[in-house]
Image (spheres, rainbow, N blue to C red):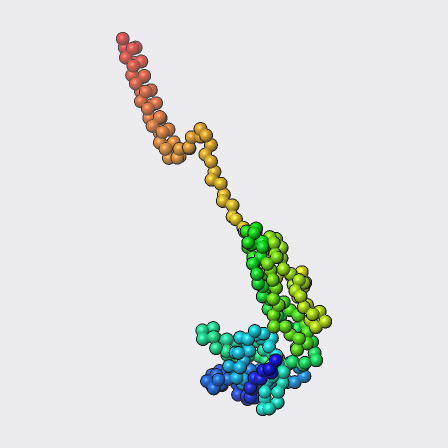
Length: 237
């Protein structure tokens, strides 16, 4: 595999204005740190770093930072991108000692159509897309590819199911962590409409009831007055 080299140059000035000036020249501000050396502020070639991030290995790509003819192995530890233009704004580079094991996160890519989806009508869900491993810089894997065609309903792919050379790599992620699984389709139950009780008479509003009582009271008073008048006339006779 051809060695990847990123051109860099020390920089003394800092600040937003200096960063803008660097970007106009095709470079971006960077910091190189870690290992036995001190942290160094520098400017690196933006196109070269962007090509690394877009490569198959991505930020786990091992490359050489060339500073005035002196090369140091490193990987991209962190980076910032403009949310509008997508241009690289800043990058953190981590020094790498080729004889010292290090921890890195490696992407997990699945392929194939799970039988639990095709035959049993389930849904395939990816829970996490990367795992952490420990290894020497030269043994950092590009990715883990897993065939999930045999996954049935309620079956899952776990970190411990990944295949790799245990003499070179050590799995840091919990082996029981679920990476992907096939689950049943969730159907929300509709609440039943409350049925009306047979023979039930809807209650009348209070206003109507009150009005009926008032009417009944008035009619009773009129009937009482008529009865008194009739009794007086009988006595006179």
